[in-house]
Each structure stands twice: as C-alpha cells, then as structure tokens.
Amino acid sequence: MTHVEGPFNSEPFDHRQHVKFAWAVLVDMPVSEAGDFVGLEIREFASIHAPGKYHETLTRFWVRLVAHTRDAGVVGDDFDGHLARFPILMNNNAQKHHYSPTVLASERARREFVEPDLLPLP
Image 1: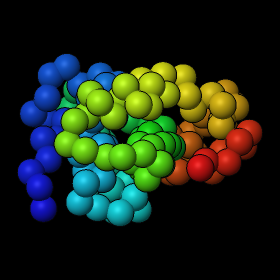
Image 2 (image 1 turned 60 degrees about the vertical axis):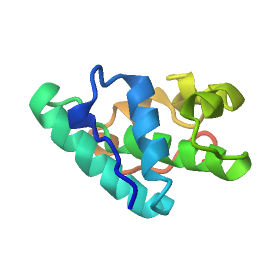
Image 3 (image 1 turned 180 degrees about the horizontal axis):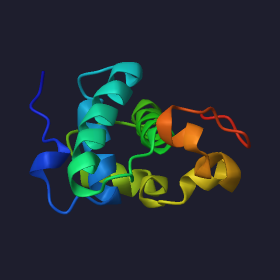
C-alpha cells in the first residue's frame, strides 16, 4: 500500500485536505474500503480537534464523489491536475445537489451514511 498521509499529519485540515486524503486513499482501496478508512481517520481527528463535528454522510459523500471523478477521468499522480479537471471537488457545497438541508442536519446522517434524498450519487 502506498503511504497515505492522514489527517493527523496535515495542517490545515480543510476541505481541500479532506478531498486530497480521499484521493490518495482511493489509489489503493476500492470505494467501500476507502470510505471506512477515511471515515475512521477523520472521525479520530475530529474527536481531538473538532469534537462533535464529524459527519459520516458527508465524509462518505466526498469519498464517493472523488472515486467517481477518478473513474471518469485520466488519473495520474498529480492531485492539482485532477482538481483542475474536476473543479466540482473544490465546491464544498456539492452535496446540496444530492441532499436536502433536513437530511444533512439530521443526527442519523451524522452517525451513519444516509443515501441522498434529492439526486442519487453517481
């Protein structure tokens, strides 16, 4: 497995870092395993640095969206080039096309992955 720099080693851990972490993990894992791994790492990071902020549905949404863009395009080792080809990955409101505010605000969506209620994920 390629060394993946997890969230504990990256500052700042913002939206771009979330996406980059998912992108790197998806090099070596299928989307289902990547979702588990990314979720675990971010959940642990959040428990220390941002208690109560972890959101399972959003984490898995971004892993699945990153996986979709990797499957749809030519994937190289250049993360910045991938972002240039798929600027949707930097739109931290992309989930709003798939989820209503009510679903995203629910405790259930924070705790476990909830399928979109507006538009299915690709």
